[in-house]
Image 1 (spheres, helix red, strand yellow):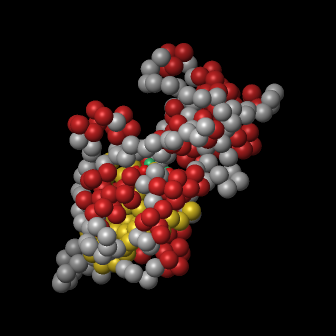
Image 2 (cartoon, helix red, strand yellow; image 1 turned 45 degrees about the vertical axis):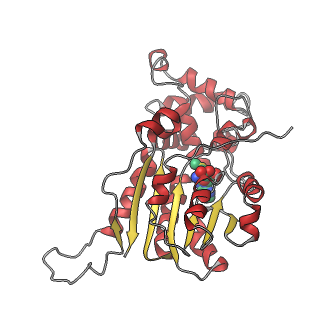
Image 3 (spheres, protein in one colour; image 1 turned 180 degrees about the horizontal axis):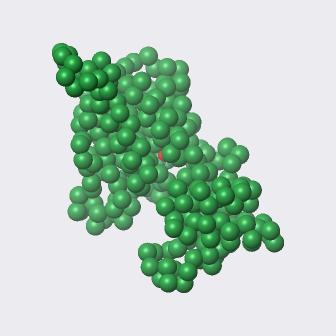
Length: 314
Ligand SMILES: C[S@@+](CC[C@H](N)C(=O)[O-])C[C@H]1O[C@@H](n2cnc3c(N)ncnc32)[C@H](O)[C@@H]1O
C-alpha cells in the first residue's frame, strides 16, 4: 500500500500575494514540496504565464508529476529536480522569459518529516539519513560517525544553538568508538544522556536542536540559501519580487541580511543622486517580517516559527 503524505502550506496566500503576480509572467517556486504554493501561483496566473518549480527531493518531484500532469503537459509548469542553489544556471536552460518573482518556503516538508524511512525525525527509529536529495553522498550517519568531535560540537552549537553541544559531541564520539551509531533512536538517546537531568525536563524533546543542526549540515541548508538568494536576485527582472518564508532564526537572519545588503547604499549619504543609488538593486517591501494570522497559528503548529520577507528588484 502506498502512503500519501500531505503538506499543509504555511503563509500560502501571503507569500503569493507578496509577489504581486502579473498575468502572463514567469515565476519560480524554489521549494516545490507538494506544490501548495505552485498551485496558488498557477491559479493566480489563470491560464497564462509559467511556473518553474525546484525541489532537491526526488519524491517531491515524482509526486508533482502526478498531481500536475496536465499543467506540465500544457507547459504551464516545469518541474526541476535540482538544488535551488543552481537557479541561475538552470533557468536560462528552461526559459528566456523575464523572471517576475521567486518564492521560497524553506525547511523540511511534512511528507519528509512524517516518512519514517527518511530519518528526519526522532519520533521514529530509522536509519540516520536526513538527506533532502537522496542522490547526494553525505548522510547524517556519515556526519555522526565520521566528523571529528570538534566539528560535531561546532555544528551542534552553531546550527542547533545548543548549549550542551560540547557534551553531546563527546558522548557521540565515545559511543561510536564502541559501535557505529546507525539510527535516529540511538542518536536521540545519546543526546538525552549527554545533557543534565534538569535541562531534560524543559523545552520539549532534548534531541530537537541536535537533529536540526545535523539536518542543516547534511543539506548545507544555510550555504545553499545564501548562494541561492544571490542567484535569485541576479535572475529577477526589474520590478520582480523575492518572497521568502523561513522557519528558524538562522535562516531568517540570512534572508534579512541579503535583502538589506542589496537595499542599502554604501555611498556617502550626502552624495547628490537622482533616483536609487547605483549600488542598490533591491527595495524592501517588508521592513518587519509578516507572521501567520492567529487563525493559521491555531490550525497549524508548524506556522509558529514562520516569517515572510519580501523585496523587489529595482
Ligand atoms: C517546506 S517545503 C515546501 C512546501 C511547499 N511550499 C508546499 O506548499 O507544498 C520545503 C521543500 O523545499 C525543498 N528544499 C529544501 N532545500 C532545498 C534546496 N536547497 N534546493 C531545492 N529544494 C530544497 C525540500 O525538499 C522540501 O520539499
